[in-house]
Length: 343
Length: 278
Image (cartoon, rainbow over all chains, first blue to last red; front, side, top):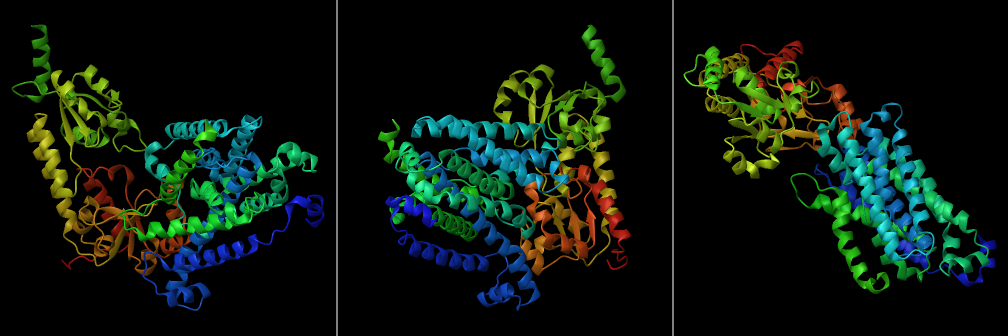
């Protein structure tokens, strides 16, 4: 890393993002504790902490460790994946509207998962589920990149994303119509809306290795993404291997987003909102934005997951619904602001 | 003249004074009622679902009739006197159009308890001109259900689906559970209507006995993160369970008595019966 920084003297110091990361991390830990305190069983804070540390009653231990904790860990993984992928894709495509959900990467991943689930392939091995989701996410990202590589504007990128999401959505419906058991279509529709409730550590284990690998690949891109902000030609002349960078970002987002979608369904707009809110705190450096976006994404998903448990509805709200309720108006505002650039 | 002769011939076996109205059913639950009370000669078509052995308990019998997909065009071309549809049938806005073609659309109410099931069957039977058969069939079902009732079982039972769904007060499942002399845990916890039984509540107040719906079919693995949860699996392993006979469960009609009989047989096998405590 130090060798590279010497080669790119423009980069300057990265000190300012450190307090930001610490603040986000503290917020994340605080929200995690809050999240552990909310549930159907009325547990006091002492009971929750006792359950978490393994000193409390067995019942509290079971509830906190096996029901509430996997939910928190999944919120970290999903939010981190979506936030970091959003920031990395925005840096790579140099486009503030790039986001796994909007671009159809998430819906392609869920198509892969639905194909595995409904045609019984998961009976062979549970790992088929994240594998298929990641493969489809990878195909979508590659397609998208191929479509928008030459001089992409906001418009072409979003249109390509709309086309990809519609295609994935249509193929998902087709798969459901052709599936051997079409009767529980409602369950799959709900699943597609995204949720992290009632998940266990079995599901966490299913996506954890891929999310970590994906996040690592994305974070490796940070220095090169900072340089790429200057322009492709400038970045190449400064020694950035563009095809390697593209490969890393595409593979990293496909791994992390695909693996989490396989477990949680599609949760939208996190990758759009979080990098946008945090950009000003990192002096608009796409590379430095990666880690704060991962932490911020986790904070947002965790916050949304707490909010939906506070709202008393007969059937618990779906997480994807809550993030869309936050994210869609945000997206519209973003479109309005950049309307002149788009047209 | 020829038509009249055919109509008379059709009417003969039922010994009715006038020909029975022709009927089409577009919904599995209505198919079940028709197969109970209708004269085979008056049924023009049953829903396509009724022939699918995965969801229909009467697939064999239903294959004797042409199947329909429940569209308005199906009904317009079949021209029945009566069309039975379910409450949420999307083409009900075409009821006027169908009425102009001589087809009366009857929507089946969703049953909340066993009395609703009897009442609906009786009413449909009258509407298709088979009131007498309806009375006989419902009386028979009522007698069988009453024979199952007279025992008290102290167990707290929880009806559970792989998605975590359960049935509280005001559902035919709750009605059936109490009829069989059991206590419905979901209703005792204050649940009304169809809802979810949260995993955390299950840990705090586990039932003595599970009534499992659709667990055998491993349907919609995506929707059943709840059903796969290791904690639920551990509780299931430690608790006796009986499973719901799938095909006779979803409609809450007369066929519920078949399900009830199978449940009681399973209860007896578990040694859960306490005769003489009524």
